[in-house]
Length: 85
Image (tube, rainbow, N blue to C red; front, side, top):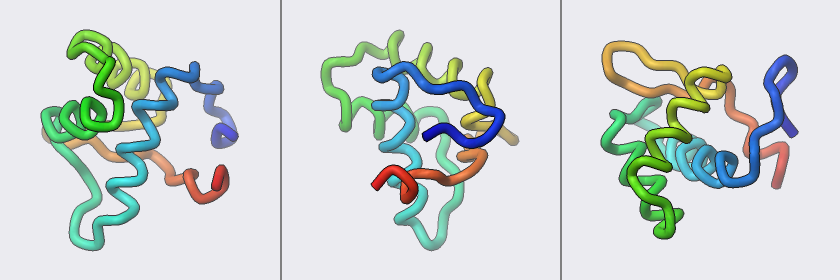
């Protein structure tokens, strides 16, 4: 379920978002990732995606408020994975 005010994610974009959210939820000492770390995490979880697909997904997530970027670090706007489990 999308957070209030966020549009639903297309399925393949959702497949890129949740690995990032899961990774950051499991990190006690880290609340952000670099673009390259995000790309690597998504590629590991979705080996069939090309780099261009991953870049598009990250842009979509940023443009639609699911992620935000500060000083080259990507942050999850609001954690919601536990609601879907």
